[in-house]
Image (cartoon, rainbow, N blue to C red; front, side, top):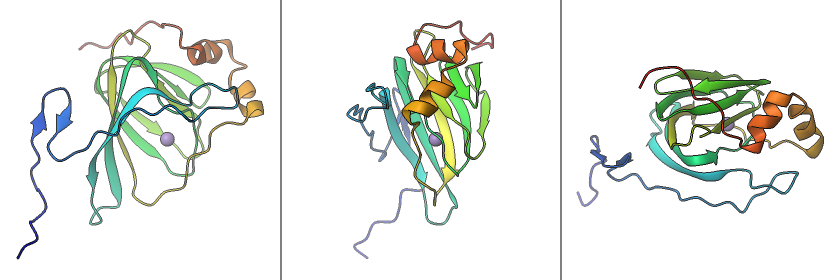
Length: 167
Ligand code: MN
C-alpha cells in the first residue's frame, strides 16, 4: 500500500510544461558529418510512455532558430504542430508548417523540423514504443540531400517565410 498510484491526471503548467513531466534539456554535443551540431535549442518532454499503449507521445520545443535532428529510421512518426511556425524537411521537400498542421513521416524518410520563423515552435510527436535507432546522414548522404537549393537554404538555417495558416 506504500506504492502511490500513477497520476492519471497531470495538470498543464505555464510555458508548455506539465506536472510530473521532466524537461530534457538541450545538449548539443553530437555533431553531424560536417561538424555541425545535429540539433539546436530543442527540448523533449515525454507526455505518455505507458506499457499499456503501443505508442509514446512526446512534446518537442525549439527556440527561434532551433532545429531537430536530421534523421531517418524504420519507424514512422505522426506529428502535430502545437505552437509557433517553422518549416520541415520531409523527404526532399521543404514545407512551411504552423499550429495544428498534421505531418506524417513514413519509414526511411529524411526529416527535420526547424523554427525558421523567428519564434519558438513546439510539436507533438507520436511514435511506436518499440522502435529502431535513428540514422543521421553520412557526408555523402548530406551532400545528396543538400543538392536541392531549397533544401540547402533550409539547412543553413536561413529565415524563411512562415506558413500562411492562421493562429
Ligand atoms: Mn525521427
